[in-house]
Length: 200
Ligand code: GLN
Image (tube, rainbow, N blue to C red):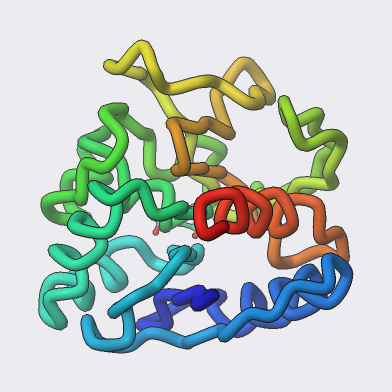
């Protein structure tokens, strides 16, 4: 089983660390690749798109042709975990700030507000109950939120301050926060289990 973490900018190392911890806890053998080119995405059984700076990640995805490869893998129902900037990137469109990010991948037909909770200094942590996953301590850093869902098959997994911050559609999970910045492996285990169900 190969999991590709998009490693162009942002919190990819942190995702790799927590993913290693989760694979060890589940006793799963997994090849974790820090993907910097579309070749690195070849035969991936799961993809993580991390948080960071959405304009930069989006631009680099286009330059490397990884955007098209991710879309192709999403069509094959390969599990994808997109967090924070990653969530913005897989959305369809959003607010004016979001439009500066450039054309988004549109894997989930929904709209986002790019800095829905304010600036860096408005970052916060909050315990959230995520449907199907359980309680997690969610870290929000210049976090986006989902403002409109245009697809009835997108399921809301969590809200906070009246804003949608976690959704799922088939094998795609999008989170407004950073699950890689705590020691809790629940979310990565959930993601690994969705890959495992598909691979076996
Ligand atoms: N709001 C940021 C952006 O638009 C994302 C923040 C994050 O990933 N921590 O790029």
